[in-house]
Amino acid sequence: MIKTIFFKLHLRSVRLASPVRYLAFFAIIVFAFTFCACDKTLPPEPFGAIPSQELVDWHKMEYYMFVHFGPNTFTNVEWGDGKEDPNVFNPTDLDCRQWAETAKNAGMRGIILTAKHHDGFCLWPSNYSTHTVRESLWKNGEGDVLKELSEACKEYGLQFGLYVSPWDRNHPTYGTEEYNEIFVKTLEEVLANYGDQFEIWFDGANGEGKNGKKQVYDWNTFHTTVCKYQPKAIHAIEVNGIGSSCRWVGNEQGVAGKTNWCTLNNPSERTMEILGVGEQGGGFWIPAETDVSIRPGWFYSPETNDKVKSVEKLMDIYYTSVGRNSNLLLNVPPDTRGRIHPADSIRLMEFYHARNELFAENIAEKAIITASNVRGKSPEYSAMNLLDDDYDRYWAADDDILTASLEIDLSQEKEINHILLQEYIPLGQRIVKFSIAYWDNGWHNIVNETTIGYKRIVRFPTIKTSKIKINIEESLACPVLNRVEIYYSNVYTNETN
Ligand code: FUL
Image 1 (cartoon, rainbow, N blue to C red):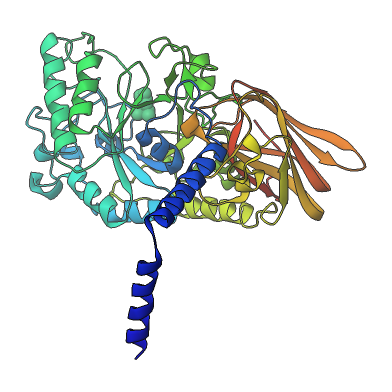
Image 2 (cartoon, rainbow, N blue to C red):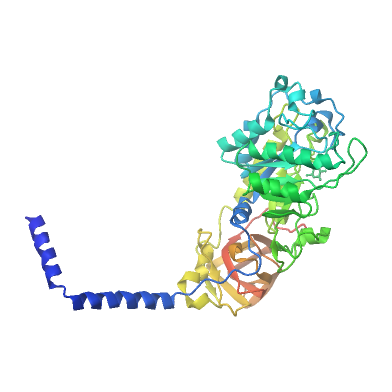
């Protein structure tokens, strides 16, 4: 019965609809569509150099593990001379799953392993060297650390990457043109056989080889080889290169510049100063990566078991790397068993908990944020987007606006001493200068800073206030921010660097 009524009604409405009605209906749709399209405020055009999608994903990784492991672990030196007996490499209990589990529990998002350090020893059985795991006692020469670690990373949902040193103190051809070809073959082996890699770390060190000669590296071919086998990998380089790349921050202390641009004017001209701070409005997106070891050296040494960096030191490093628009590559060297020593893993967990505690309560979460300008007055670019977890929702100003302010109303007085800001970098890095003020019967300035970039964390003496104002004082194009967070810590109160 119900079916029959519906059928009849349906037929009726069809019978009633004349061609004129159809036309009118069509016109309304077209009009509504045109009207909506006109009203839609277009997003800002990207400004200057912008990151590739791989680089955006790389920025989001923020923190990952460096692993220095090889004959130096057993001989207790930092730079093996390539003359060491390969049999010294004999971990008694190598467990790459333990490295991956530790990294995962520490909140890291990947691991980069020294496939070959300056001693030339290959942690895989390379066909282009006689100084490899194959020549060692470990697993009767049947082992392959790259294979074990790449599988462990997959199992723990971590990204996998490799460090490869072109400087080779063992290879007999080092210092001759032939070596460049050998190195490319070596690269092909590590790039083609261990699955996807997120980053290839080229050490720029260029010393003498076995025969006392130095090598003129064929960087162009090295980078082309990476692009061929791992087109998505970021090239971490101390010198110039091609492909999506990041830059060494210029020191091994864990400190990026307070001003830190992701851009460079000329990728092949990098002074130490430029490595740390980048160059404003540069035409190439080459962001900084901060590499530092949890111990005094890069390789394990029993003498440094009690010299593992303190949580306070690691937190300082976090502020001066991730907090300054740079990724943190923290080296954690396994011991002679081939496992991460408890002194390091315990410290990593303490560091993890310290960060979790600090970022436990975002005081801005329920705030009301208003902006002095909202792009096209459109809710799509509202300042409230700064509280939205969706990375791709942002606040943006109109094109001609280069200074603006954001007022954050906390609705009641709160103690605060940290502010975290993020620019929406897929549209470029724009902000040159910003300041922060708090309300106490008038506005009082508390912070004067320069760049923001992917992420900037500022800490300042504790204040009690109900309102905060972020003043964007200079921007290369209309400002575009996608995140603001506010925190209070009773531990990490003083800026130390
Ligand atoms: C440097 C090397 O000489 C160190 O041994 C370490 O590998 C560090 C990450 O890079 O250039």
